[in-house]
Length: 420
Image 1 (cartoon, rainbow, N blue to C red):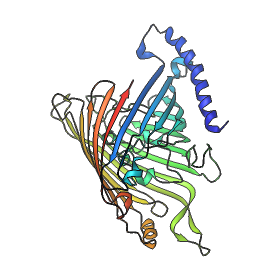
Image 2 (cartoon, rainbow, N blue to C red):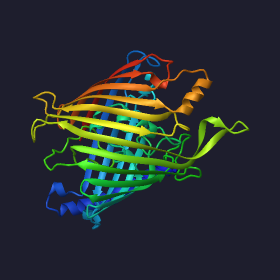
Image 3 (cartoon, rainbow, N blue to C red):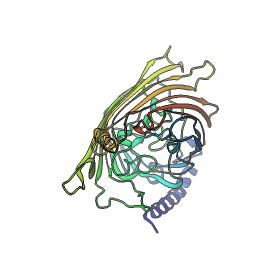
Image 4 (cartoon, helix red, strand yellow):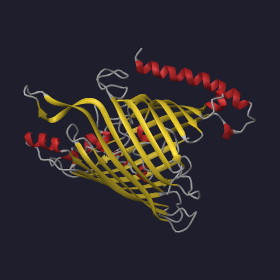
């Protein structure tokens, strides 16, 4: 039995045992569903993506994700107050939209290999709402490098910058392949959060097949972030327009400014520099930093759903060992653009990924001409019910793949999410 199957089997056994205990406890609670110790959420998100013009080739594909998450409040189950146990598993299907478009940033944040996967399984303990400790298999993008307004958009870069998302041996611990590690949050005041994480430097599921934990040469991934938030008590709680992963829904904010940094301790091959014997020069460690911000610019009056927000992302990566050396993104979102559509959202955003100097040198030596890739996305999210969301979208990709070898691409799409 592989390590991955052992983890999945262990999660099922643990859930079965604790859920049985939880049902017994909830049966004694007098039917108060709000205090139920077990919360189960399921969802399916599917998307039609059409490479209509330019890019690598024309064509359509339909990526999708079906997910199930279970949260157990261990205070009611086992008397461990402030502790929770979380499991998130999903199945992915469909092709790879970027194979048609040829882009490097990812026109769909649903793109993933077709398989069933245990994405997250962790234990979290809260101490007086000031200190939080989490350990297990964990998607760091559920908390780090995360913006409320950027979540509207479909391009992967608006969730996490490509200079970080495409770093390391096989990327950091994010969808669709996560790592084992631990994270600590500390709130010195209600609107300030310090957080740090230490994770395996390579995700659990390996590219050659099988699963491994902290194998020789993996190193560690260290991530830190400090976030300043403006959270008026009158701010409404946002709906969940997509299947929530990680710690689940977070409190809404009117403004956020966060500074973060990341560092791998392993060794990585330079894209250009070589040793006298012709072997690639290897660097000990690879890192980067990011600055992100999100702000409500305008709202007509307190309690009214109409609101205009803006967000910005700036990321610096390691151009010695990765293609993307820097990233700049940002956009605007308008909530309730129509009087009769209070929960709809309209968004326009731009993501610009810049090649690192060593990648450009390597391409020039091979006779290829490079250019930074820039994507413009226009999207509209329509909330058709408490359980159904429809989102038409169009993206225009300039210099797909960060080269001048392909024509600019036009990529319309339609996403549908159903949740329960």
